[in-house]
Image (cartoon, rainbow, N blue to C red):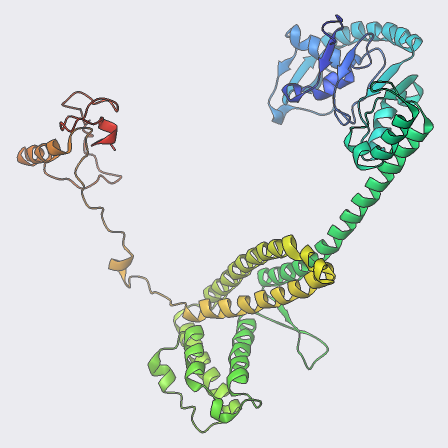
Length: 498
């Protein structure tokens, strides 16, 4: 439409994304029409008559007096000899004399246009719809009155716009039908303005409620995040704070003492569950207890068989199993340097915490997606989310403790030189070369090479000085759509070239 009227205009779309600020900055020139979204170029200073600085930059690039410089040499403060500016993610430097000459020329031009634009009424804003938030509309209006400059704004709406369709469109359209107004007739009435403002207020209240609700969900995750990050920080520092159940104050321990505390807790918790005072002695499953201790602490059948658990109480059973686990770890400490073992303990603990925390975050995301359905059962989704996320967090902490103990107790130190044959990478087996030829011809080629004395050679490894032999095709290349040379009648890509 603007082209048919012969009006020069600029459409700010994704094509000119890098030049967004420059296009919006020149929207205040005489006779300039700029089509953009209501949020394009926010923060750009629109000067009536044009922005001489942007015009000087473009002219400097056109005259090739501006020299591109690396980002490391770019300065955000001009010096006495040069002026620096950026354009389309590139950095330039221009001599100050050339800059003052170009800038002075465009400043005089924009000052003259400024007087004409002010006399014409300033910048006029035309909006094709109203935003859900009044703040965005006010920002768009505010561009027309920059620092006391004259300007005006006008919005054109339709009863089919989303804002009017959701809030109050039926009531207003019914009123227009009763008044006998035809389609396409402009409606200018305070009732429409009040209806729009009322709809915007409802949308803003709804969006605020959504953000507030989302923040309450994020607070649950944030508290768990603080707990996990505090544990990671203590592991990195090598001093972990333990909270005792029967003591008000906590005590600080190193990684080994922390590991021993976790392992002892796992043993006695399992003993309490299987052989506790609340369990009938006839229902004690000592085999299951041995199996659990063996799987977690890596104790084999002989070590478990040496621990006699019959005719003992739950406390004696727990102490015997714990002594066997401690003996295995102390034997490992005799073979490994203490400083190295402490570092390995820290690294494994951090790795287990990171893996379990990432899995826990995924689980929380899945829980949050469907927790809103609890509202149909007359339950508060937020309360249900807090309850279940806490249970999941406790389960994650239990998995961290068990995985940490399992990894470190099953860790087997290997002395230097031991199992060298196992740890040494094996040489790759020599494989015959494959050619783009019929499969029937491949054995003949391999056999010819062997008869010539070449034989199958192992793959070259870095460091040898053997000359590289270029493989050349003996037969002409078979195209993918050519008939297969095997005589099947099918295309090569469907036969031997598949």
